[in-house]
Length: 393
Ligand SMILES: Cc1ncc(COP(=O)(O)O)c(C=O)c1O
Image (cartoon, rainbow, N blue to C red; front, side, top):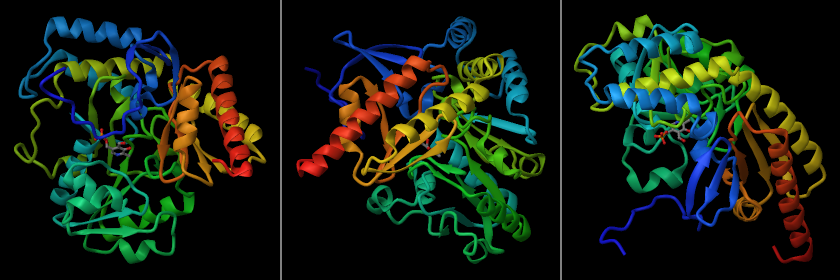
């Protein structure tokens, strides 16, 4: 026994894991699991990608900690690689350590750039657990115990085009949007809604912040999910997949926004450290050389097609939705029993919203993995549907 116990904020899954490679994780008992959980989407490039390991090892032996007050070659290399992947209209990037922190900085940048205070977010949103990011997170289950949060936040209804004008007014500093809500239930934004939000933000002089922490870096079949909508955000936040498994996040922005902040407006001890730069550089190189977004698109389409066809007619299933390898199966019941059943068959999944089984697989899943996943989900849902019919589930 230890003197200290680990203070967990997630429910324990009852498994001890020992090692991970690619799309698999092995338990201490030697059992192999298919990882469609990927640590909330982080291991999108697979566990222990050889290129990421090689670059990180080399960096560890060269220089691993240094303030961004000092220039390093690895930062240049990171900027080079990331520009090739993610240049799309942004002139500036800064690295932080978590998605929440990236959202915090986006809030500060928006307030600085506009001189306004009000922030707009949407029902179903999830932007993180720190107090600023939590203020933009809609779910009362996450917020209630910690109120009062930032008072100047207005929530619009997700996908409600008519409501856009009422919430986005001249006092708004930033509108913060996930174009596919992850934690909220794999809710895909309609094109008309996203365009209305972007146009209205522009009209009233509010910044448009797209939170790509979960959708970004190839997961939805594009480097950034917002590009599907033809909009041009002022700021995007990224995290999770960005470091190929290394904890790092980013804020990307424009000349206009960057020119309105000055040294001292923000700071972070670890942000932009050489190891993080090396991780982003390596992950960007993998994204390019292995055409990761394209693979995610093709594999995601195949997976969703297979799920729709195999689950058609199951009375527990409302719909299958998502984009690329960000997939949700929306149920007529709570997803807990399905997650437990799938884990029993060796497939690790997670939930989203109240009723959605969420799969965030790595881009390198094989056809055999797809069969394993689709068979598992079909069997679990058929078993539960029979249970419901028998009155036992
Ligand atoms: C869209 C979105 N924004 C922000 C966050 C917060 O990221 P982190 O948990 O790294 O702070 C998450 C995490 O799930 C997320 O999905």
